[in-house]
Image (cartoon, rainbow, N blue to C red):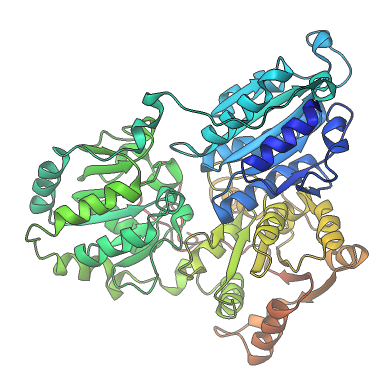
Length: 566
């Protein structure tokens, strides 16, 4: 005879869970009471949002399902932003919340909220448990749906009386999904390939767009092998960074609102666009009605719901990329391909390389270049959201598929530090660098306590321009410099705060990268910073009105990039 709480933990262990992130409270207390001896390590965050972002970092860096735990009421509602973030960015996540006693549900009891109802639009699957007997089944379903097809978040809400109740436990169960549930994982239809052959043969300017789905499916190596054969210019979304080695001659870099000139121009001019695992959201497409205006689109995607959202695609190829990409490659080997060398020379040529007016001479980008030059091969870069995020994405050059982690679809400030904690715990021997802005860092600054308690060697960087930088940039360019409520000149002393948490910190002034190349002394200090065996924080003082360029304004096509202030 076992309590419901013990059954939950045994079922989690059966799913391979050895680490969870959470914050205790009344309705979830029985689960915490059962933790000792369960074989599951609990990571205490200092806020439930910190717990769910850390669980995301764990999942994003490993591909495993992350687990976050919170109590009812405010504990559960504090998870909602992380759940939405996981939904937007296809992160496998299981959130477990406590709920008031079953008999009190609907009575506005203390700390009662309908977290099941409020998260229905944000989850792939969710369940409010109604009996102790169903606990093994719904946990098995939760982990299946978190990973099946396009990954995403799942929520399980357990009334406290079910966690306290007892029953005879016969062991975890295995969820057998309906036959239709796994259809999207199958092979592409054979009749697709003749159509694709015809499209390739007729294309003069083919182009490839690579999104997060390539990384999530584990198909990066297969994609690179395909591109080595095709030799078609290729770009990456912010979540696709690392999928294609930047040294490949056909790689044009990041695409979108702050993408490279080469990527955006090629995407605007292409007549055949091959999309691999990308949602084509507005930050990638620019004005949707003017996206790739002359292109026929072939969309490789596991989730049929993502097709035809921006523009009709001429050929949808639905299936897991680990299967459809090799199929495509096998078919390509059977035919003689056109000579696209002239187009490749234009798309990837030096005339489309960035110029100084594109913002690459900004102190922040020079600083990040100097920092990234020192990154070891086993590194992860985790960013918060804002200008620093785009500068980091533009300058990131590593070819580690899961090495660049950020909140892309939701753009949730406060993501960086707790997500980096999850990444470091999942990858204890890796160098994990968290890059934040002064605004985002303060949104979950309390997680410095978690870093200190666990002695995690996370390397934290704050790009401090004393503004909400990205909002201020838009105010400068489109609102006549009306910097309404974006001034953060009264920021705290981040070095002193870090030291108060027992973490070594230092300040680096903008003069450290005053030239186009950082001086040797800066390079040495950054090397020591990255190699330190303990947590470190480095504050880089950035000019207040530094902007991220190139930039595609709202309502503009990708070809209408802004490279300097007008």
